[in-house]
Image (cartoon, rainbow, N blue to C red; front, side, top):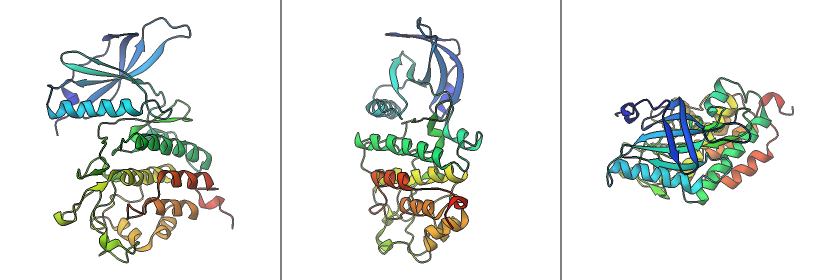
Length: 322
């Protein structure tokens, strides 16, 4: 796939004017497939010192094109949910003949991946994991209440405050308003809900496994490709994020019993396999088991998940009562 962000010029030093904004793009913060994000300083005089924003710079596409419609959806879905305290705020959209600029909250702590892997913020820290994961659950619940389903939940799309006390859901480029989707393979494979029916791989976890069709990862067999529900698919991704917070790793490479032996063993043994193979408490394994329910109809809901996280005493085995 062409990285369309590579077609963008270097905007460092550029000044953008829009209503009350007078923004200078200071330095590049990151680059994705479709855009480049810059740190921007608001040059308007402020009583308490300079204010900073993040500005996402993208190509502007011809009206009516597929790429223009995709960009419009990203902006409209983000606008619909940006009032929540744990979702990156979208403050303005600035357009010229060639480019589109999104003025966003600047989150000075980088992304959740860095907090997990580089800063060890969550290592053996039940309190910090609870605080962060509940914020993510609340942000996703707010999206679902507005009819927006994210479809690309992962630590790289969750931003942090400088002290890691608050997190913010970001990047609505793959979001949808469709309650059911036939877009398979949408997002990052580590976080996608399962592919292929599991009933032929060991003892199935669910009595109705023979009736369960593939979700986001899809199936090589067209007869198993039925539209899947986007809300439970988002919840599945939360399970992998929770596992990242707890252990710094994923529970398996990909949720396909055909290609991943770890996932195949999980289908056979259930939460016991998670407890045996990950440094987590039995209560944490039980919660993950409710998230990684292969039947999306019985998978834990966001309110239920919130209550379960609040109720847990510890995520780690060494703190469990003997």
